[in-house]
Amino acid sequence: MQKKLSVVAATVVLLSLSGCGLFSSDKYDETKGWSATKLYSEAKSELESSNYERSIQLFERLEASYPFGIYAQQAQMDIAYAYYKSQDQAQALAAVERFIKLHPNHPNVDYMYYLRGLVNFNDNVGLLNFIYEQDPAERDPKATREAFTAFKALVDKYPNSKYAPDAIDRMKYLINAMATYEVYVARYYYRRGAYLAAANRAMGAVRDYRDSPSIEEALFIMIRSYDKLGNTVLRDDAMRVFKQNFPNSRFLEDGAPKQERRWWKFWG
Image (tube, rainbow, N blue to C red; front, side, top):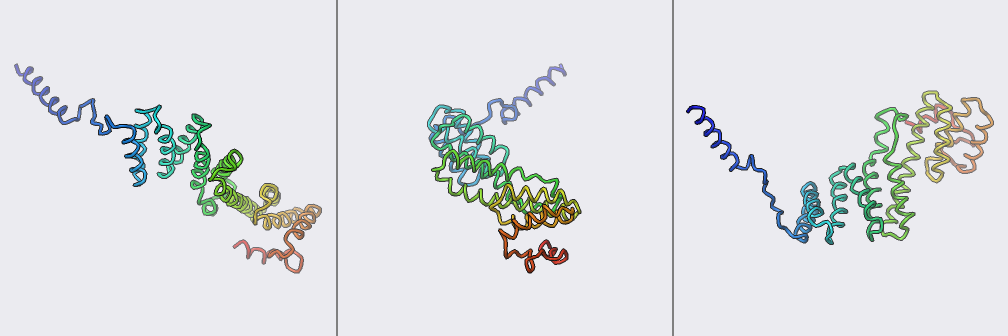
């Protein structure tokens, strides 16, 4: 008898909990029955209010409920943007790549190329700040190169896109950032007596980023490094190019390289 009462009591408790929703398999969904228009309107409102997580949920519900409707593709684009605004780089890039793969001929696909660049660009905004925190030889500014590649793909594929001018400006910035990084690494090697590594890194900057202002210092590092290595031929050749391009360089004094101790002033 006591066992039966225990079973009855347990059943009553479970039913009570179920009534409270703790064991309900049918969780309440306020969006149930919403039209595509309402879902999109609510999702967009949440996005504009910076409620990114909620907006993503609504956009995903819209895409799942109305996959062939007029809002589905726009929802996919907005999901990528919402992830970008919430600083979730991995999810933003995944959403961008998914859209480009599914809709390569979409009239607004150029925006997704642009957004791909922005995601990497913003991820690497602190490029020139982090190089003082760790051995720069161990750093690889991958995001910078990927941002440049993304913007370049946009400009090459859609030169008349309204996003192209801004992409070009950002590419110029990225070129200077990458050149500055390479010169910093070359300087790092030079300071530690790794003159061959310094010369090679500086030469790479000159070769790959010849329009960057950092090339002036890159050439000078080559001159000093070759001098330390005793390679007068390469030193003199680098000096000839240096003087030809930077006759009034701050690194020169009366037409000759500044003394080592004075040169360090430029390097902090």
